[in-house]
Image (cartoon, rainbow, N blue to C red):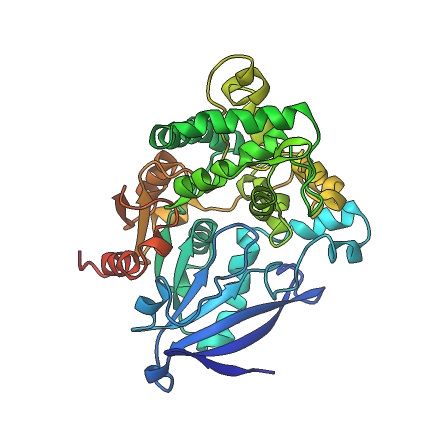
Length: 433
């Protein structure tokens, strides 16, 4: 059933689709996709072109906007927008610790999850495009991992696109996960240094918290085991426009005096468990490194292995001296499947994915070199999540792609910059800038 309803300035329509789990086996198992159609109230009856939005992640459903928030208001001036919950996320046949056991054991679950990468998401888009637009091509806006999907779209089905816009999401075309993380750790270290330069009082606060966690077990109210490594992973927020400030406020409320002495405060624990839990996005942990798999080499817990090459991130060694505890960023580690109750039942499934040796290529350099789709990409200078050098190399490899390289925004620029970011990139696709 299709349901339409209103919010301030917009008309929303729920859209449901059925697609094959494996597009190479169209008569096999199927899954459900959900997307929310959005149109400006005063344009609800107009014949408008379509823009499909691909969320960052992997593993996150599309933004749940209220009205015309962030970039959406600019898009609605000329488009109908489709906010797609990519397969396995949101309302699209969710894949999590509750549903994956329906697929028997870890081997079957891992095999199932091989169909949740960018290539399958793009084929979903092409399958539903016929229903949504009647077969007409549409514009795609890809944020972060959504940009990875967009580059796959340009590689495999450019005929489905009138234009493509990427925000903070141009992937390397050929880097192994190891290459991605070797570039990432120095970048993360720079972000941490910038945070401590802004808030020097946080150096001692972070050391005190890490020391407390190394001294004994701490289990958060939701069952998450808060280790020193887990605490360090809170650095993921430093890639956002307000992340440094958010981390500072979190650290300043860490301890409270109790009859048994100093303890981590309830307020601190409540916010930390919200930041660390994967309950709402388990696919992020399960397939995060798989999005870099393109050949016979396993990802093999790349972020964990490469971290060992950067001993300055070892909290115990740091505390033996007087240096600052370094936070980490966007990376997934095997210990997360021990600490996080939302991931614990999926540990063996994750191990099987990490060991897989038959990943297929996601990008076609030859086709990208002959690209004819207008493409524009925002590349954020020293983006913590996506390496700038990798992004610019890919930009040069895609024929006609125009870049906007800026240090005005962090990775969440399409949210923080809203209409201005999208307006600039759409103009670039039309040679108006």
